[in-house]
Length: 243
Image 1 (spheres, one colour):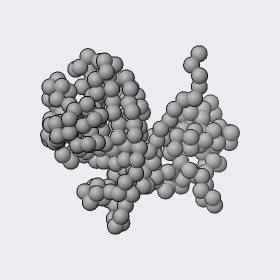
Image 2 (tube, rainbow, N blue to C red):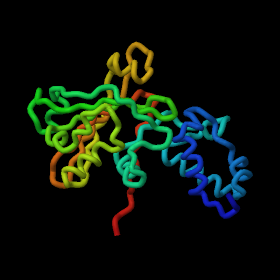
Image 3 (cartoon, rainbow, N blue to C red):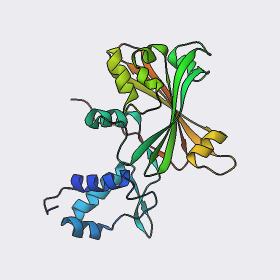
């Protein structure tokens, strides 16, 4: 890169390395001086690039050390929808998705009201483990009503579709419009501890329940995401007023 390299390009360079797992949680980032020498830029440009990574939750300042990579991160649904629209994939660089279970289950008291069905109603479930750079970041269980499975039978197969909601929305003829995300904390189950590599006796995990609605008002998916305490759940919302 030349002296004309901007801070955004530098931030993108390191963002990709973090997402690909080349810089892992806890690793120390290059110093500002090293960044300046590598990219041939002024310190103000290097500092602005690092500030951008910090604002995105990718890095943290650590006294006496410098800038370090933050803990494992799980992107929110808006980020994944945007990623799919750009790349055709819902997973970022360095991310993998391992399907743990696929089948039919009775909607429990958490899922049933969000799918607008009675408790015990058969719904389809896909459970998977998402990792970044080989590090587990969250477990996700996606629940689909019968009308989604009717048009998207691929969701009954143990393979990744690359964007299950996007595929279902396309088949249903309505775009994704709104997601409600509800965040709570609870103790992890033994199955969750095993999948996420959590070893303590009583482990508190963060649970995010998201309900995705289409433009025609139908719910396309209710998903329950569970992440360990070391995983950062990221939301980013613009505070700018619309013109």
